[in-house]
Amino acid sequence: MKIEGVELRRVALPLVAPFRTSFGTETSRDVLLVRVVTGSGEGWGECVAMADPRYSPEYVEGAADVLRRFLVPALPPGGDVYAAERAMLPFKGHRMAKAALETAVLDVRLRAAGVSLAAFLGASADRVPCGVSVGIMDSIPELLDAVGGYLDEGYVRIKLKIEPGWEVEPVRAVRERFGGDVALQVDANAAFSLADAPLLARLDEFGLLLIEQPLADDDLVQHAELARRLRTPLCLDESIESAPNAAAAIALGSCSVVNIKPGRVGGYLEARRIHDLCRAHGLPVWCGGMLETGIGRAANIALAALPGFTLPGDTSASRRYFATDLTAPFVLEDGHLPVPTGPGLGVEPLPDRLTEFTTDTEWIPL
Ligand code: OSB
Ligand code: MG
Image (cartoon, rainbow, N blue to C red; front, side, top):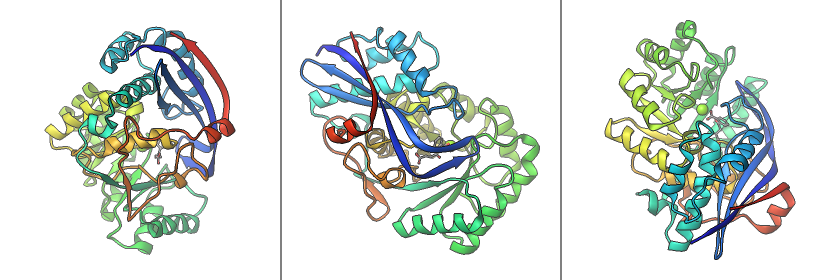
């Protein structure tokens, strides 16, 4: 196998509704796709960086820049995914950009071998239970309508985005309307400080599955302190960028659950290492999301089928975000999505959709 070059493709997909978090509001998904081309095939990867560096330091234009300037030129042409990972290691950070390129290499390689990503990673399930992430709303009635709609669709777990001023009341309202049996959790995207511990402890009475990333990304020690003051389990997202980070968080007692996002940790190889580490320590993990199109969604579903993913993830159906996806849509069935079985990611962008939504392409010969 010889990689001839890499295409960077920018796509703009409108969202079905604005998605508001403690760090901002998204109305459209500006996606960077990476396509690795060999003499006999191609492989796709989706970069999960967002338009602005508000969730993490990465952003779409920055990811494209580091790919064209450093990562693609360093790529070994033979198509070995471990060699690709090693070649990118000297360049610090930029994990979302690295993950996209690594995934495209993995896809082209697995397609050639006729092996699915799920099989390569060691998946043990053929479908995964799905949760949904519900954005911050302008009012409680609007929130209850949204949550009710998702429960009707069959989602098995609800995650509410929270921020200071939108924490106890939304959780109380959802519990009062939908009862104590709904699997419910919250995600603060680093919007609180340790001084908010008494406020966050008021969430204890609602029997949440977990609180995700209440404090700043680099606050492992304060997360450990907060964990001691709460009954609700603490889960980390932004803080975990690598397996060594996860090991530190576990050793410090900063969390008892980990949200694994392959983009955030530099790819599916590192995501699997974090899964293995957490499993060995008895920590449940679940697969996060970054408003992926069908390409990234397919790969996340494969990862979520590993045995340590014992909590439902943010692996929602395509229509949660997009009226029209780039691939055939993922459709919820009995609260689950099927794990793709075809070679590689098991999905492909539909050519007409790709043409319709592409805003820019760039070819980088190797
Ligand atoms: O913190 O999990 C997060 C979306 C963008 C950036 C960060 C996060 C999210 C979500 C939505 O919560 C996850 C999804 O459904 O894709
Ligand atoms: Mg999160």
